[in-house]
Length: 245
Image 1 (cartoon, rainbow, N blue to C red):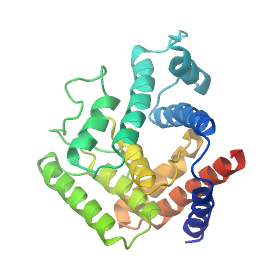
Image 2: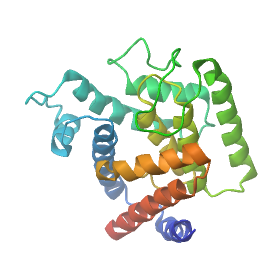
Image 3: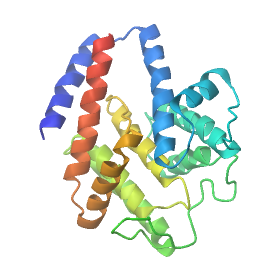
Image 4: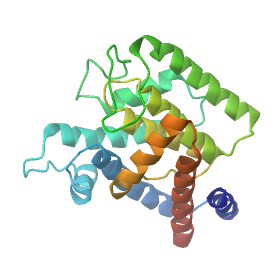
């Protein structure tokens, strides 16, 4: 795919710039925390603006204007989940790590279901495909880890392909009652960062396209469009990063 080839070349350029200036890296990381948290939460219906998200993360400000405590917690929790992913990115992906990511996403919001696989059937509104039955979630999650581990060890697929497919397979299992989308996008970035690529942001105004390519992958097991979307986002992230170095 053209975008994967371009991302590979851009990453080679970035690798030649390493080690990167620590001040620049920290500035870019803080910007990513704000933008990724805003967009990932907004995709799921959080109404806080990017400026309100920035105020909460940088200044600890409690935003009024009818915003809920849950929306505030979603901002803080997502930031902490990103930091957790960064801290474990050199470790093998396990169900424990996935549960821990989800626990952070729902911390202080839904203690009963944080990090716990669901025990009831759910549907993804508007989607054409069904998700895993609660009775099969544990088996499917074990299969997911086996698939991922094999993909990494065999080294046959590009990290961008693995990241996109990991995200798709996870959300198709839909192991948790809530928070699957945010967790799935963090898992996608886990794989990208593991391979020394940049984490990517799916913006809220791309939500319809994002849902469409996810649904196509879920129905047809054809990940081409999702992979190309992630690769395109990676190219954009790398180009922006390189411009600022």
